[in-house]
Image (cartoon, rainbow over all chains, first blue to last red; front, side):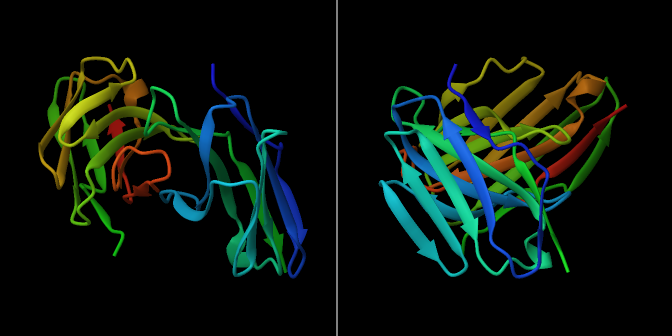
Length: 113
Length: 114
């Protein structure tokens, strides 16, 4: 069974700090990786997508992908209280299940003032 | 514009009722999805439609019946649901089913089955 696992939370960081979220995946055929943010009672909102090994930066967010280690991470710099949410790591494989997003269990992030 | 619109936002139904959830997008996307999310769990895929044809059914019970009348609209027909079917139902769409395409989620319908 194809799995996506995230580092256990909850994660609590002070305002202005760097929050580091990690994710591993079991399917070597996975091609695309996404980080979604979900506020309580709301739907998932895309934060980052990454498809190639290396880093991808967008504002305060940096996603890192290492396909050899089957590892994806998300760094949030200068964390703000508004970043407090559940962060979902997701992967899509390139096999017969095109279009199927497999999510990790999520990491709850709290940024305290 | 990456808007996926779901109606209704909330739905309460009895176990003998028949109801429908509606999802609409006007981004020209050709793949649409239904996910179910229970409290404190990640979304779980139910169905995938690609070019208005059902391409993935994740062994969902027949009391859930999807329908894709056209490329912009996706329905989920509900009949004889159980209390354990209470959840947030999320619709998503993407350009097509290819792996690099981002799935955009609607706000969801929160369903309570009494």
